Image 1 (spheres, rainbow, N blue to C red):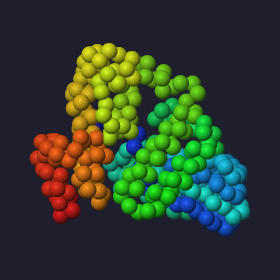
Image 2: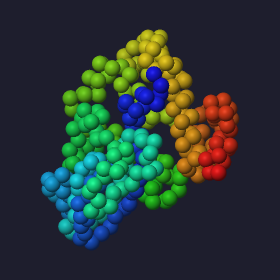
Image 3: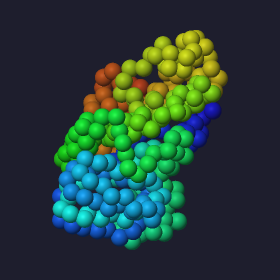
Image 4: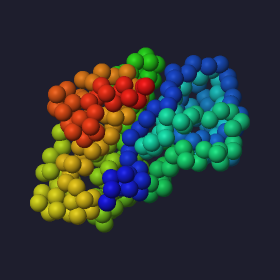
Length: 294
């Protein structure tokens, strides 16, 4: 099966922040709108009223809110508030650069359905409420604040770090609500159902066949054989293709150096990256970047 077909059937878990701010405001309100992406809010100080799909929620200091894509939302600060927040995609969409945080009053998104993120229950079968309860709220709140600080630096490397923190936050949310072990049950039925998301999250780390086989509860030889039977390539080649795909995107959409991209995409060094990239694409990384900007 072609790698792109696999990614379409099971969207990779690759959190991507669209906007994040450490919002300090006097009483405020934003009219109803419908979301294309996820909105994660930490009420650090004050009282907010957030209406999601016509249901009203009251949030106080120390609480967390997650509004999922497709929802109708009205945001109100009933007092002076401090609310660090992030608009983000959770799943990879090749058109994500075209997507946007919708404006107050924007309700009809029929022209942008290809940009609509799937919700978490749709992909993972796990229901996540609007009012979040997480295992370690202190760490969760500190991570949101740190994410916001990094994002506001408008530095490509700091923003990449913020994306990684977004992954940590969303994993913490999923872990908090996987009470019926639905991920484990799906793994038992499909030992490879987790593979695309797992590779995406750990793209910059060394991954061994032994580790992956253990996660699938298979022997290394059985894992490799079944993997190739399903995807048509070895686990190593599959992971390498994902690394090259992501490096192509970063070369054209970021100001990161080639060394930084090599490290972020899991290559041992710039020489390994350059050699592998040219072998796979026919271009050097520099040529690919120049071509994309020409």
